[in-house]
Structure formats: C-alpha cells, structure tokens
Amino acid sequence: MKPIKTFIALGIGLCLAACSLYSPTYFGTKYTPTETVKAYYATKDIERPFEVIGHMNARTGHSESSQANTRKQVIEKAKQIGGDGVVFSEINRQVNRNATDDFTIKVEVIKFK
Image (cartoon, rainbow, N blue to C red):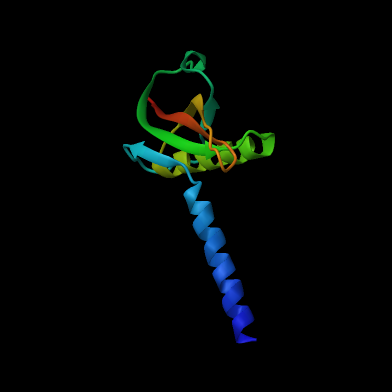
C-alpha cells in the first residue's frame, strides 16, 4: 500500500509543478489586490485615464478552452498584483520540430487614475 501512496503523492506534486510552469509571468509594480479586473483587446477601447503598471507574458494554446483558461489565469494574476484592467495585445507562436507549437500572449496590466 505504501508504494501506491508514494506514487499518488508524486503524481500530485508533478501536476502542481506543471501548473506553475504555465502561470503568467509578471514584471512591474505591485499594489493592493483588487476584486475586479476588466479585460480589453486594444488601449483605444479604454474610456478612463490609466497608466500601465506592468507587463505579463502567458502561455496559451490555440483552442478556445485553452485561451479561456489563459484569460482566467491572467485576470486572477492581475487581481493579485492590484491591476484594474488587462490589455491582451499580441500572440506569438514558436514552432517546435519535435513537439506542438508554443503560443504566448503579451498582456499589459493597467491601473485607472
């Protein structure tokens, strides 16, 4: 029985480690966490004065479910760092020979003035 428990614990640990590899990477200023973050796809759509407080880079896939999951992770990360909004700006694709292609999205985190 003990090897099974060890195997299960190892599996859970690997899953958690894999999840952390795909969490958004943030570079910028941190503020008090916020409850609500608005999502935008162009800065011209933002009707209030704002400042960019940082940048994120998040891995994503090409499926709708993968992109929805990435959007959710980015918004949660923005809440933690005190952002009021995020601007999804650019998708990059890296072609790999021996694996599936990697997609990343650039995100600006904003704070309303």
